[in-house]
Length: 313
Ligand code: UDP
Ligand code: MG
Image (cartoon, rainbow, N blue to C red; front, side, top):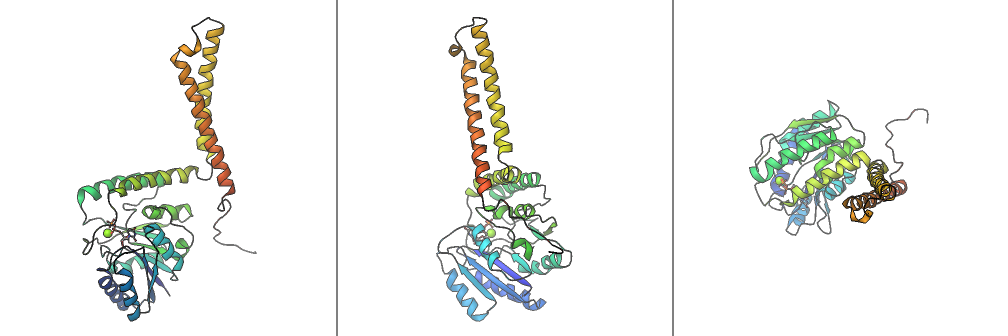
């Protein structure tokens, strides 16, 4: 099998038949051997029934149904685990991504040797104010933090080589930053292709305003985990010690001026409380770092390296 198409969906029953027909048309035209994996992320409409009907007509259509809504990341993760193709394409179920883009994405993976190719919705058909502007900001921030030159991290249409999807875990809400996960796993050839974006034909968007808050928090996670995930002490220990020693320095100064120069009582001076605060905060940060180190030392991933090749072993 050379191609797996993974499609996460939540309440998209209206789009599924049309989307499937379009995918089948593209697959036929190019004579690909393929599978389509629909991951029903806890839909409450008829999506699963539609998927079963589609499968009855075409055995290349496969489905996974979640017990409840776990989120797009979880859906992608399960789809990745189940996929058997050498190249994996992800796309949204709402027909905003065009299946006609599949052949050229596939070509970039197979012929040009990319590990991951992300779609770039250069011209978007979404509500300008609530999506386009914040998305530009997020992408700029993600670019500068991850040093990956992509314009559109969160595009649903992406292509991966098999070894990428089998070595990353998309958790939380990290579907927005899958290219970053791929980079952490050591994949360097990350490319981009301008793709056609279409207006949503059926249904409504499944992400409301929460996308901005969550997107921002996940960006912070990317930053911290990427930089200090495996060595929390280097962050917390540094700033903890810094804060503690400033506090201690001020404390020493206050003590000396009290005992040798007969200044007014230490506790009457505002500086005393500042010193106290710095020492308490410093100790807290240091402890956070220490506990972080213990956790990362015990984590199952502490020594899970991805070995690319071996010789003589
Ligand atoms: N989706 C999902 N689980 C969720 C939310 C969304 O599987 O909890 C799917 C949704 O059905 C669609 C894709 O993720 O196929 C992208 O969602 P949507 O089109 O609502 O996002 P937008 O295009 O507005 O960013
Ligand atoms: Mg959409």
